[in-house]
Image (tube, rainbow, N blue to C red; front, side, top):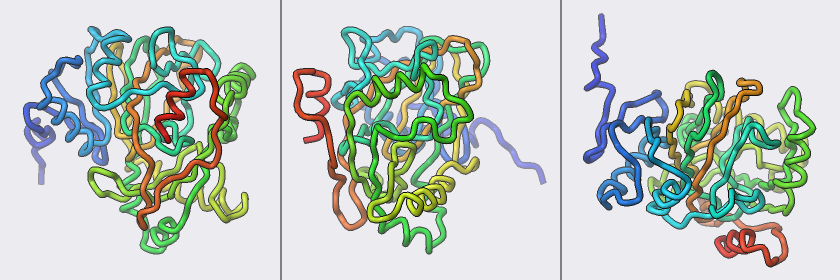
Length: 319
């Protein structure tokens, strides 16, 4: 029996948005929309709804966006915040990943900035310079990963809390790490150390879905030894990143991706050699995670107050 896979059967719509499904578990390409800060409130609401449904949204041909308009658009979704330790390009709050500089390759599975008690709710990534080949990004659906756990693993995960830190093992699971990247991680990314405790299973504040909150910032599981932590973490993390639970995006120049950081992990594939790859991210402030019993994430440690306005802003945001 043949199955008709016409555009009408694979495309969806939310309000005026036309969305092409990219993969079975998450991901939608919004077609024909020009992103800018002056979009009607109804369109922003539709984008919010589409984001919650598809977890990650993709937009082609957004060459009109520059650093300022990118930030102004991001501000329509909430208060934007700078990265707590990595300096932003001058005059911006952008987080930049430049493959030509140390630390510019996010080639490990993670949810953004979970070493903070209140981690971002939305990330908006813009392709500034894309290699001729390679450099795709993969996202995983952490809510679906939890849903697909056997009952016995759900019961275990429901009871666990994890310590997340930006001072994590940067070399873990990498075959080779250049000294420049290690130096950048130690001197810049870990210039101020943050630690937070999050429930391993948290409740999405909009959908009520239960999702796994893991990724490479996890340092250990609370109350367990390092060995036990590593084994249980690997067991649950591997459930998140199963191929059927992911979507892979092949970037073109001037693409934009927006993802729900509360329900995804992502991984930038480091397969483009010495080609230039430059992307910039607008980060929208979020809240602390809520466990199944109603407890919230908590700060374990953070730097003392400083005169650095960038750090102060992030600390204030989590208070």
